[in-house]
Image (cartoon, rainbow, N blue to C red; front, side):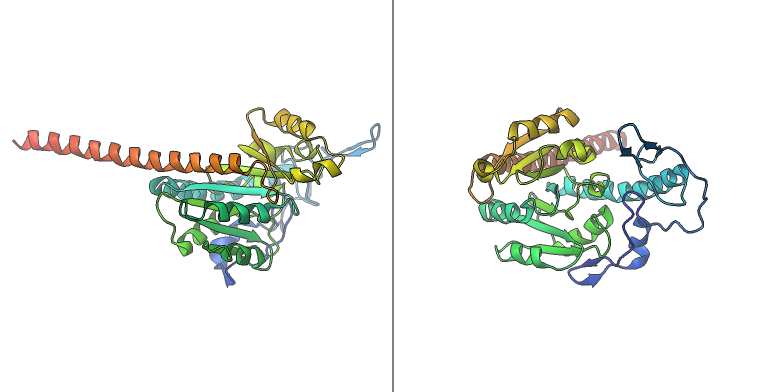
Length: 311
C-alpha cells in the first residue's frame, strides 16, 4: 500500500515488459504487522459538518495504522525515491536534457496538449516522451504517430510514476544530448506532487472544464509546480468558469507559479508555452557546456600544478 494514497502494489510495466519486482517493490509498502493504536487527529468537526482525515502528522489516514508509523513509512519511501531522482537529475544535467513532468486530473487535455506540443517542436529540437498510465499504451501510440520516440509505463494499480520507473525508461529511450524529455504522469493531482522524478519542473495542467478551486483542493500539486497551463480556454464563452479566479487561487497556494492560458486545439497561448520550453532547453544546454568548460579548466589547472611539481 502507498501511504500517500493507499494505492495497491500492481505490476509495473514499461512498454509491456514487467519491471523486476525486486527493484520496484520499495515504492509500495504493506501495512500488515503494524500497531493498532488509534489516532484521534481526524475527529469529526460536527459544527461544520466536516470529517477531516488529513489533520495528523502524516497528513493522511490508514485504518489500523498509527500516524507515527505512516510518517516513518512515507519518509522511507520518499527517501528511496529521492535518491533515484537525484541520479536522474544529475544525468539530465550532464547531458543538457530539459525534463518536464506534466501533471493533471484525468480529462484535462494533457495528452492532446502533448501531441500538439510534439508536432510543433518536431524538427526544431530533439525530443522524447515518457507516458504514464495504469493500463494500455494508447497515449504512447498517439505520440509515436507524430514521429517522436515514446515509451509507455503502465503502473498497474499504482497511481503515479516514480523516479526508479523513469530511470529505467530513460535507459530504454536512448536520449540525445541537448534535448527535451516530456513526461506525462498518471492522471492524478495527489501522489505525483510528492514524487520527484528528477525533472526540471512540474507543469500542472488545469482545464476550464474543471473548477476554479482545484488549486485550493489540491494545494500540494500546485505548490510543487513551476508553471500552470490553463487549458481549453477556447471553451470559456460556453462555460461558467472564472479564469481570473482560477489563477488567483493557484497563486494563493504558490505565489511564484507562472501561468499560461492556452487552447491546445485552438492554438491560443501555444506560442508562449513553446517559447517557455525552448528557453528551458537553451538554459539546460548552456548549463551543460558551462559545467564541461569548468571541468576542463579545473583539469588544466591540476595538470599545470603537477607539471610544476615534477619540473
